[in-house]
Image (cartoon, rainbow, N blue to C red):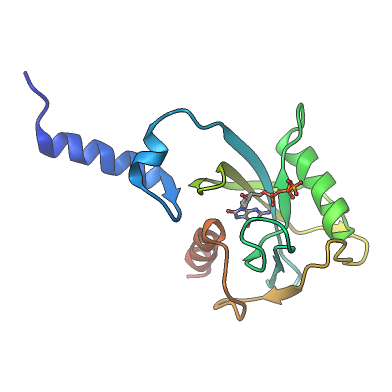
Length: 163
Ligand SMILES: Nc1nc2c([nH]c(=O)n2[C@H]2C[C@H](O)[C@@H](COP(=O)(O)OP(=O)(O)OP(=O)(O)O)O2)c(=O)[nH]1
């Protein structure tokens, strides 16, 4: 029996729901040829419930956009190891045990990334923006703009947890 069109569209919609497509064509994400880049991201939350956003340094894709600090996993690293290393390298702190929270696939023109968002409530050391980033402790709605497209869903998830 031939596949019914409504079913087919339903399936396609469901697939596309799982991937956040940024600045591009739908066909880009379905060719199956792009490697997924794994990224560890830290949602630092302070005692009053504010969270830390940092600006992307000059020279990187989407420079100047606001994001949560983090970066790509190196070969053989776990998400936690990468997060620990990135937050030490980029913002000068030593984190406690992170809480694995949510994942999001994002299809950018420059890369297909899987973001592993972790909540971090304990850390030591003073914030030191080692790549010249701007930073801000934020609450909802955030006061900084523009927010990186792959970071926007996090603001929705945080809002959902507050109601
Ligand atoms: N750190 C971080 N990256 C994010 C967020 N949202 C989002 O889409 N991304 C994307 C942007 C990039 O494509 C990717 C992170 O890669 P990156 O280039 O910043 O990582 P990195 O620090 O390891 O970079 P580098 O060593 O290559 O300079 O994840 C977020 O909230 N935080």
